[in-house]
Image (cartoon, rainbow, N blue to C red; front, top):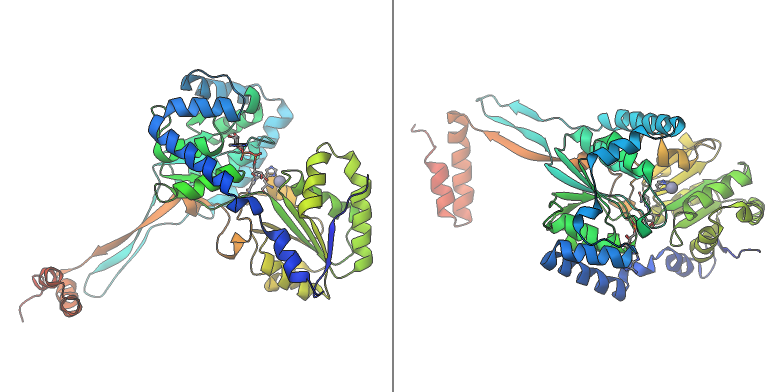
Length: 435
Ligand SMILES: NC(=O)c1ccc[n+]([C@@H]2O[C@H](COP(=O)([O-])OP(=O)(O)OC[C@H]3O[C@@H](n4cnc5c(N)ncnc54)[C@H](O)[C@@H]3O)[C@@H](O)[C@H]2O)c1
Ligand SMILES: N[C@H](CO)Cc1c[nH]c[nH+]1
Ligand SMILES: [Zn+2]
């Protein structure tokens, strides 16, 4: 069965309008989704565990009668780790070691300096006390996302990590539980969607309230995170996966087709884009897609994603490709070109940049080391990969010497009186030393 994928030529009359239409993640502003999410959050806030059990039974087709059935204890997690086949355990440990090594480098340290009069200024960096990690589980299981969320939190020194992961139809993924044990997650609840986000944000009789919720998810998760922001911190809105490949037309077209599939297979809403200056090469990739698609286990999801959201774009040259990529600000950007270093300075907005023909995006999803929780839907214009910095916060440090307080007291007094804030002024003036 052939597949129709949108093909555009940059600069053609309707190019901008068609591109914008395909980039829009329509359901983000879907009224119905917002209504469902608002109702779920309100009920979880008001009714706690009872609402959690009811929604989990409804949306994940479970048959729980009490929250105790929706928690996986430490012994269950450890058993999953101990019973893993050797190759899976080794792969999980290798990935965890590499992710930890990468994230160790992101750790910020407290700093301070001393002025001539002895006044000390600085910043104290502290980890969050308790965080919630959302691990998606609707259409696929994501042990890799357990590691990507939990390890940076551990590196930051977070005291308690609460994980939520849906188990639709009660199907539990052993690798997910094993990854939680390996990464040192403290509690695991088999909850998903907006109800899981609401429970973490407000707390229930059983689920502890957290300080920040991180992790990717579908439209219900993304909408719920947006809604609870303020009551709790969030990392970003990480929605359906995306890949944008800039290719010079010299990579094996089968490799490029499979790289496009690799993100399309996550979700019908996922987006795969190829930008290339060579029209004949785009034809070859289209032919590879037709050839390889029937061999894919998740053919139906890939087909829908490619049909609805993929774009093959012809541009004048690689510089035009980079400019277009910056406009899209993709989650993952592959530079499948002979000299990726030469193109890199032109790239301004992307969650992660995969350089060179050998660097398949999927290596980044599992074991390269950098985080795979990345900004999607153009938000790479203003946000960054999940990292240790998401779990650390900073407090300013100020310690005046008597001399410093006297000098700055004079400055503060003038400014405070300019604002007509007399208590501020007098408080500062008390510390001014007599001449
Ligand atoms: N950006 C990243 O770093 C990253 C990483 C991994 C996965 N992802 C993306 O995360 C997403 C995961 O989505 P998923 O669906 O597989 O899992 P998910 O866990 O995000 O969503 C499943 C939950 O959605 C809720 N839900 C589903 N249908 C509902 C309905 N009609 N009404 C109310 N609630 C409903 C259910 O509670 C269910 O538990 C995919 O889009 C994938 O591409 C992103
Ligand atoms: N590509 C996803 C982020 O968009 C992460 C992932 C996990 N497993 C496979 N892929
Ligand atoms: Zn992936």
